[in-house]
Amino acid sequence: MSAPQHGLAVIHGHFYQPPRENPVTGLVDAEPSAAPEHDWNVRITKESYRPLVPVYEYLSFDFGPTLLDWLQREARNVYDAVIRADHAGVRRLGHGNALATPYHHIILPLASRRDKETEVRWGIQDFKRRFGRDPAGFWLPETAVDRQTLDVIAAAGVAFTVLAPHQVSKAPEYGLPARIDLDGGRSIAVFAYDGKLSHGVAFGGLATDPDRWTDVLRHTSAGAIASIAVDGETFGHHHKGTDKTVATVVHRLQHSGTVKVSNFAAALADHPPRETVNLVEPTSWSCAHGVERWRSACGCRLRGDTQQEWRAPLRDAVDWLAAEIHAIYEREGASLPGGPWAFRDAAGATAPVKGGDNVERLIEMERGVLRAMTSCGWFFDDIAGIEGRQVLRYAAYAIGLAGPDSARLEAGFIQKLGDAEANDPRAGSAADVFRQTLQPTPS
Image (cartoon, rainbow, N blue to C red; front, top):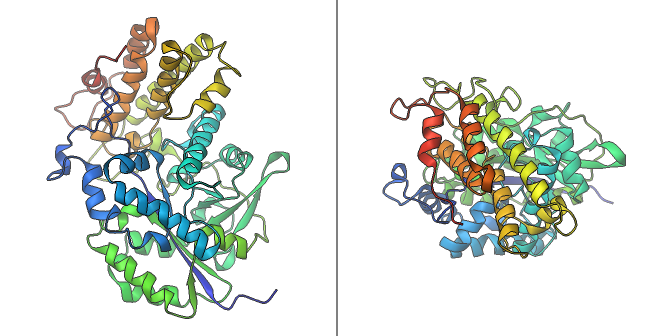
């Protein structure tokens, strides 16, 4: 086989917004901080998702399934463009642009293996339904990873994932993929994205400088891969007008004659892993302390004048609630076809459930507690913010579906939250914020 005559450039966007729907009504409530738009989904669609429609065909991307669900309902032209872009990638490169992702944006290393497996299976089910193919790659929320997480996605048939360079023992030269060996003879390919280049796009000004960005990628040598991974909202939302920058960069590279705009799956087909690396675990791309941002006051935050002492009590409360809800589900669902856990996996994240009202209640209770694990509740600076409130709202919803156990679970959840204080003095304690989320659950 002759050596490749060009380098590859892969620009990956991780597109995600936390689920914003009120679990009782199924609608997104008004979010005043998103003014003049009704809510942040609407605003970011206007600033990022819609302006990027001409570019998706040339990007590698993942979209959170809960965001795709909202786009399908509320911005169908954008949703259709995303699906078309993946199909265009198959035609252009032989491999689609889209990566699958867990159904809910949870920190997988902090979840039980059973919950990991359900989230991965639900994510793959959703991906196949939307894109009409099996996923080759899988994006991990916050690139948070441990060996068990890799084992779960490899067992599900996934060929590769994407990590930050500090998450492997040694990032291969030239941006090439490597292999991580797992138990039972399994292995998975990993791409370590270019950390310096990605940081330059997200935070260092490259996103507003198409000349400099193009020049950097244009010098990718033959046989090498220059891969960038950033939040998709970088383009247009975090940096205004930069949807035009990425379109300009892609256009220039397409006509460069030296660099081919590709995606990770096609790059893997061109460059199968030749070396093995070890995983650094547990780690993520957005916490210098591993995965502590989602369970402790590790110091990672958006603003320097806030405290995060509420994070550990919130993690303890949600983990405790999940264990209690799972025990109720396992007990009451013992006779479900195939057993309760296989039934949960098959039920999926959104589909109507057959078997009567009680079965529907049990599955909806499980869906609710998994939504309560959404990472955004810990990522931001205050439990009284819209993301923290949403996590508490989902917890309250799951509690309301627990039947005779609801009062006990509510009291236990409040006790676990303890006296953790919000940063907003008007909000009071974490328990006060939780009480404000309580709503009657439909019977």
